Image (cartoon, rainbow, N blue to C red; front, side, top):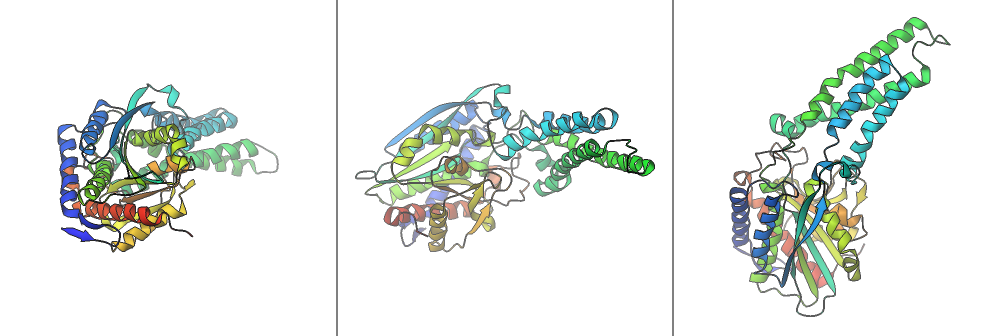
Length: 419
């Protein structure tokens, strides 16, 4: 089935969707899970590079170093500090308890919410890779559009698998964080008021107040301990939708353009299958840092493509990296306008917990946005063994390919839209 959108005529969506599904299935069956910085991640990228050699002028695989457990390795430390603070506060010193609470929050904020490489040096080093495929224009390169999808898969989020993503969030993850906040408040109050004080307060009422706060703090301890089982430290998942679907939607887009005979005069198209996104966007960060100068030499637009599965939740991402980063107005409207040409009314959404590869580029002043189709609850397949080829939704991958083809062709003819 060929489509004839305004800017991308004669694109064979069905054929290239089949190509994407077949490629995803092959990697899942023949290679399997691809933890960040693993030989399996690298092998998958080598297969992807072999495919892209048929449609691109240049392909390469670049290496970089990472500490994959740094991203989530703080969890036991944070839990231990939070739980210990309750008893240290009651039996010893509110000052020491407050210090423990602050220490618990620091890696949680810097590693998990802000994706800083804060405690990475404490963990073993690995080598990861980025696969880069470049389709050159006929003439001089005057502008560039970059698609980036990550080829690694996450360590299994055990609670998501056992409970479902929304239930795990509501009944374990949020209570665990709330508990740490309550314990911090308890330590601050004890420090300010002073346990056992006799000044200006009724001794009996004060005693019962502290007892009540201690009990409430203890109530949250089981939730914090359950957080220790948030993810497996050894078992990674198939990652068919997250994010082989993004990699293959991008690769299929380049393949579709080539097969339709669409050549650009001055627009370079780049496909990056990044490594170690699930370890804190490490691949995209490494690429953006290494190539920052060339990415800024000519107008460049970056689109992070991640998980094409839940079509009803397809969206362009405005804010990223736990809401701390705002993406470029022009790039996000480019994708939205291209989607409208394809018959899709995409919403702007934000990533308030977590991040996408787009954030690595936006942080370095390179114009970017995110594009995905995933239920934000998240769904039970997310980061679990259920993310298999059998759970793919080809119609979401088709929509991704169609919109990306239109986006690239629109960018070639018009550049980024103006406000």
